[in-house]
Length: 351
Image (cartoon, rainbow, N blue to C red; front, side, top):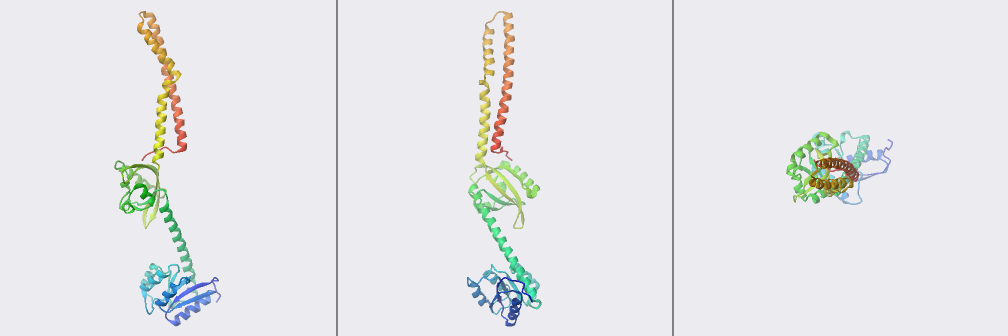
């Protein structure tokens, strides 16, 4: 038979029956070039081999009936000692319920000796190696994601959609809000919202459920452990966490930015109110009105008083028009200022 696996493989065969080991050895040499086979006749010898640092095997073939250990205890002990290597059970034990339990425990395949052939053994080794490799890369990827979650400088957490309870929080959230990790995991989202905004929070969660994976975005008020209220920019996405539908939430503290924008808006409003009265368009008709008022008060001539009253009305009309124009111009300037501020930072809208 032509050898299909061209790269070398290091295989540990844990088998107490010499005849069965001879069959395994023959099948392996038929299908794998440069195969290196180590043999352990019992559990004790297998642990000695696996304890050596240099003994990292590509595959472990395991019989379930050894003189010094059998069944599920044997499987668990071997899996513990060679977590990086795929373990394939090769046994005469035909109980399919036990086979399923073995696979759930972590073995990569369950082969019956009576059905074994060079081809079936080769395929099992090939597939098991690939699955183990994929599983390894997945574990590495998940570990990196966990590290990214924990080390992110922005507070993040995962909440259960049904109960709204915290399922996971990162260190930044603990530092920001002042609760310990254990305290967080006993809380629900409403516990970090001001009491007056509970209904708003519930509406937001309902929208998050409706939006599905799109999640929600918005600016909200949160309450820290010491009672301090902060403004946060929230973004969320729907995820599955430990078999549950959940929401991954990022909450950036923008309290300082919010206060700064509000102070700018307040200053612009003050400037608008203080500056209009000092313009020439207002000061000139106002001075004229004050002079006319004093003159009219001293007049006894009815004709002259009537003429000055008309002049007073004209000046009042001019003043009204000037104020109207200034208000229009000031509003335009204020809108331009607000637009410029918005280009630096979006307006804060609380939910």
